[in-house]
Amino acid sequence: MKSLAAIKQDAVIVGAGVIGLATALKLLESGAKVSILERGRMGMESSWAGGGILSPICPWDYTDAVTRLVRYSTGLFPDWVIALQKATGIDPEYHQCGMCILPPFDKEHAIAWCSTNEITIWRQTLPMPFPVTGNQNTVSSHQNDVEAIILPGIAQIRNPRLLKALHRRVTQLGGQIVENCCVHDWNIRKNAILSVQSSCGVFEADSYIIAAGAWSRLVLGKHAMNLNIQPVKGQMLLFKFDVPPLSMIFVRDNLYLIPRKDGHLLLGSTLEDTGFNKRTTVSVRKRLLDQAQFILPQLRDRPVIRQWSGLRPGSPLNIPTIGRHPELINLYLNSGHFRYGVTMAPASAEILVNEITGSMQRLDVSPYQSGWSQCDSSSTHPIL
Image (cartoon, rainbow, N blue to C red; front, side, top):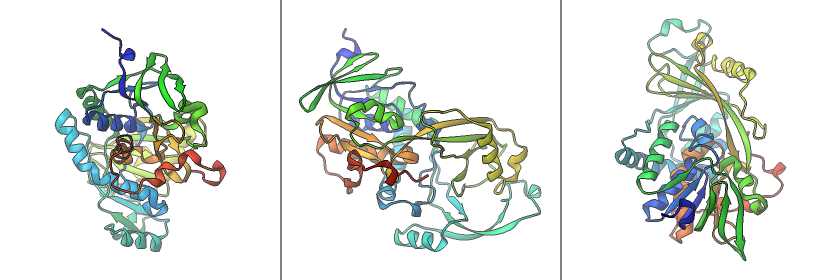
């Protein structure tokens, strides 16, 4: 029997995060043979580390290219998740819980943007700190009322469970995931890739897809051209309550609190330019806790169950690159989603597979194909 590396595939994907898995699933559903090469463990980088908010933190602060892709992708999510759960038996816990955005923010701009984009909003005055569900007597007596905006249509997903469902479905359909497999070099003839050299052997395919997140430039090496994808570290904290302390996601500046149905509460997140350094720090833990107590002072005495970090693939203006390499006809990229890889996953997979197969796109994809020729990064730094 031939080894896996000796069997030619329709597609080899580099990176087994949510983007790589979603792309593999879309290809497998079309009947393709797919192998995924993962430098570490499946889904254990930024896809696992994120909070799973299926929306930009404040959507009115982003370009149309970002919000258009997000809206299209979140429209796909309910059916996508239902199909995954039915096929795998794993519930990714998709939950339309809503999101409350607290000041400071440009209220007039936010309201106008939501109106233009037909996004339902509620304007509501809330006491701060916020009363904890079922424990209102513990609220600080020094409350201040703030005028917040609530976006009731915003949903969340539980990232690790989504990744488990994607993993199971990919393997059910015959996809091969090779972990601890580092890409070393590309065998190229004229303007096409013939094979990829890895620590697990040589893999041949008709198409090669880079979905390696923050590591995409390293994988591409000299073929990265002017692609500007850089690691941006985010640290998060986890707490556990007997019952969910909040009924929806709360956001203030770049801080967010995400309540899970089982009483877990995620607190994040930082935006740190530290290269590929993933170390967590005591100073960040203290800063996140200090900021969060404005919303939920009960966190002051609540033990931190876990602290972790992830490296997001930061890109200019947060716009991912999805499409064919300008010079190598069978090399594709699906990366640079910054904070919104999970949110954009089903749409990004659809766009990339449509590009490979020559199928009609359902939205204007030109903004997601300009990343190869980005100018100097200092003029288009990710929104931090």
